Image: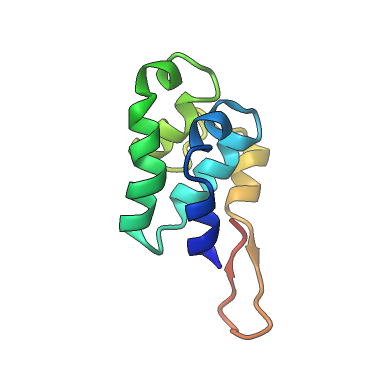
Length: 100
């Protein structure tokens, strides 16, 4: 359940955002907005608490850039863009759902 995953991240967003691969996870969570209030409460609020540190970190700034310019090739490599845009077909729905 996405809500449980987001809630369990509370207090860990800063550490994830500063990590090479963790920042991609945070970007992915920001890309899938199924519950704006929860994303704002957990992810965005924690990012803003550590704004100064994140802005000056090479990985930490990437989730912040995602908020202003989603999935931009200026801060994401072609490979990262491919995986963030990857869709996995759902056995239940013909439309499928996003991998992130």
